[in-house]
Image (spheres, chains in turn yellow, purple):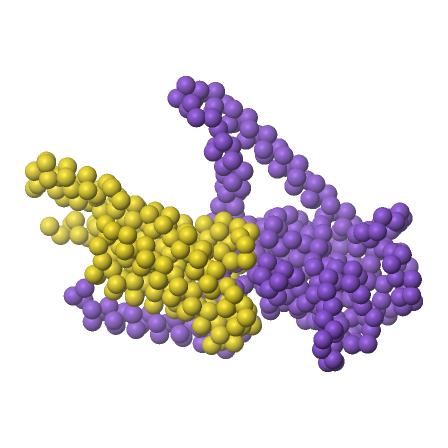
Length: 199
Length: 336
């Protein structure tokens, strides 16, 4: 009985890493180049971190957030003080992970949680810029950009959350079915996988 | 959630790590000890971004083709696939044509000014509050930090950081960018500063021009070119920047402020050029596009010659300052 949990842990780590890298690349090479009104783009990486934290708890959430933030700090066009995204995403991952403990995955609550996380993350990032005296994060810019960015994040969040839930759920289901094959009757297995299939 | 204590310890450790990084990088500035980390980022993510750009481009272009294909997929599957392939070919052809037209214009502009350029393509853009893009050329292509980046239309920005196969460009519209600039037909100099968000925010004019001499004449419609920095780094002289759109007369300070509409559209950058060698002599106004007034101006002689040719003579300013005053090349350098 030692093998399955270990495999699950590695699988989850790999899934999280893949999700983060793919989102990060999509962010810089697709999302940031969209000429959206207002010149603001949704922060897909933040959404992915929030979704991961909601799915797998605060520990995964904050470690994934820290690493995703660090990657976002060093990916080529980045030109801000190193560590800002790492700090923000780490905190957001932790908070969303804590919130996920009392949350039902089958309802619409995750989507609201994602919106709240997006708001907190955007505000926090702007705040670090202000504390460091970044000329780009002066009040006139921030006050105009942050509401718009939260709106875009909320619009984009169903897609990201859906994708992350989908990826992690599929993995979990495969895991469960493999475990269940030997011990659980076929009917129960079918019921479980049926429940796991719907969003 | 029974492991709260351990979770908190890890959280604390990670937060401290992030704060230490911020502090070290902030205090280090340009010579931050964490530069190596950024170099690592460029080396790791650069190729990934290049690959994803080459994937994303055709996908984006064929996306329409996929969505507006007719519904009877089952029946016409084979036909549709063929159709799709042909359409894709057509599209990529058109894309190539478009790009070759952009390149043509770029070469024309560069040739007029006598700049030596290396063409590049924008592959990604910055996140958050910064106006930065990544190009698909790097130190392997001879690109170094503090080189001017221009497009066929005008100034784009300057190279700030270079990876093996990628280079990061600070756009002229970024709020930390300031460029030494000069009004056309005169020696009046000033500083062009960005206002952020690729020109879409803050009222639509992404650049602010501060004229250092408050008494100097300036009018709406006048064009602005780069002044050129010391030793042509980071900005080479004579690159068109934009048109004065609005003059702020309210302040009676030491400088006058105008808002400049750039020639370049910062939201749709695609083919750009890195100026790898500056022109031998200042091209002055020769690179400016012909004036919007439809006066048949003779095209300026290509290549920088000793006497600058009047690139744009408009009938709008009969009583402007005596232009064509040969400015000494030792003009002061206000920008960085």
